[in-house]
Image (cartoon, rainbow, N blue to C red; front, side, top):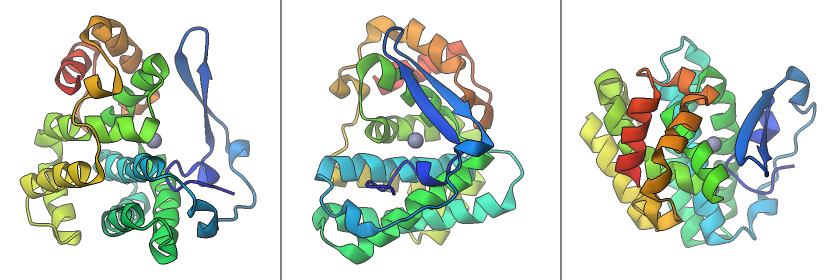
Amino acid sequence: MPTTAGTGSEVGRASVLTNSRTHVKKIIFHPKILPSVVICDPELTIGMPAMITVGTGMDALAHCLEAYCSPHYHPFSQGIALEGMRLVNENLPRVVADGSDIEARAHMMSAAAMGAIAFQKGLGAIHALSHPIGSVYNTHHGLTNAVVMPAVLRFNRPAIEDRLAAAARYLAIGDSFDDFLDHVLRLRADLGVPDKLAELGAGRDRIKELAAMAAEDPSCGGNPLPLDAQNLARLFEECI
Ligand SMILES: [Zn+2]
């Protein structure tokens, strides 16, 4: 029974564990982690504080967006990811403005489950950057994703330009990659998401270590362009 609308863990077969001694997040995958029964009741999310609503909601967007951009072949996930992005786009501002909007809360709960179904296709650099930042600086996962999202879109641009132009048309926010990126930047600003990781407490002093951790993250495998410690370090530099 999820009480937030973001992770989509209720439909996932993965579990994330943080080793509190080494500050490393490890992901365990097993079919038996998938719950046999799920109750998604948006009433349970009514009391969620605004910043948790924003962070978890942006996590749902990140799941749909990274799944949608992942180069792996999975047309079912592709469709689910696209509709999930539309639901977040239209309903996240509504639930942040009015936490008791049960209809918008229900759409966000659907979008969260859809994001985690879609990301069976793959995640990418947003999550690869976010996992080490979250474990080293104890930041909120979804909020961290929202901060790094524009830099990752710019980095992946050569591989996802057409795909994001199509998404912009479906979301009715324009018809190009730039329209999609501008929209993400506007959405983040409207929801009060910080622009840089420095505002979440991350510093340049640990970039090398963070990049090495990110390069080991299984999310790297779903990114549209190849990731390594060098380009991940440059992404951290830009995001911080
Ligand atoms: Zn996530």
